[in-house]
Image (cartoon, rainbow, N blue to C red):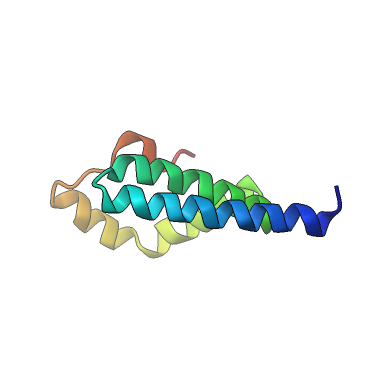
Length: 88
């Protein structure tokens, strides 16, 4: 399959998944919408050829730059669900 055709299919799939995520969010299914967001992220990474190590490096930078804000959020007692925690 030619690369351009494959990219077109991925873009079309992304558009459909984003529509589904919006419907789930509107219908009050935030957990399912978040899971779909992970699938969208995975497809975007594939489309833009972003590796897992590049994503981890970005997350590490964001954690370092935003460490004080994260500490403040933890102090407020707000916790992320276990499936959204950064795994190193």
